[in-house]
Image 1: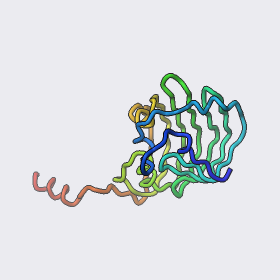
Image 2: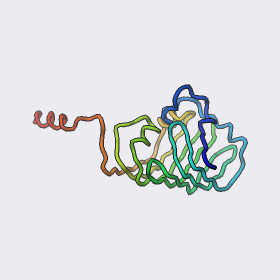
Image 3: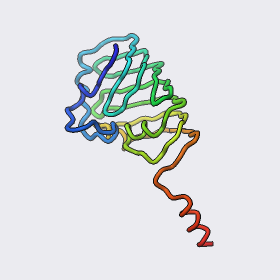
Image 4: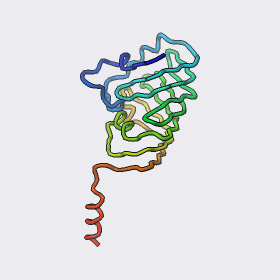
Length: 172
C-alpha cells in the first residue's frame, strides 16, 4: 500500500499531532477484532502521531489478540531500521520492540517520539524494550530493557559546556 496513516484509527486528536509517547489518550485496540491474517506487508509511508517511516516491509501476523511484525525493515529519519515488534492486546496492552537502527538522524526521531530535542547527530542503535500501558504515555513510563546508541558528529544542545568547564576550573 502506498500510505497508511494510523492516526485515523487512534482516538481523535485536537490540534497538531503530538509526539507519540506524549499521547495520554487510551490505546484503542478494538480494530484488531476485524483481523485474522498472516502474510507480508509493504507500506510506502506509515504515520503514527508525528512519527513517520518509509518503505516499510515486514512479515505480519495479526489477530484479535496481537499484532506481530517479524523481519521488519524500513527507512527511518535518513537511516535504516530492522527488527521485530509485538503489540499484545491484554487488560493492559503490552509492547515489545527489538530493533537495530543504522545511520539515522537522532534529533527528529527523539522529537517525534518523546518531544526531546537536546540530542543531535547521526547514529546507530540497538533497542530491546518491553512496556505495559493503556496509552502511549503509560507505555513510555513503563519501558524496561536496554537501549544502546552511538552518535557520529553528535551534539548535546542547550548546555553551555564552555561555561560549565570554566566554573569547574574556578572551583579547584
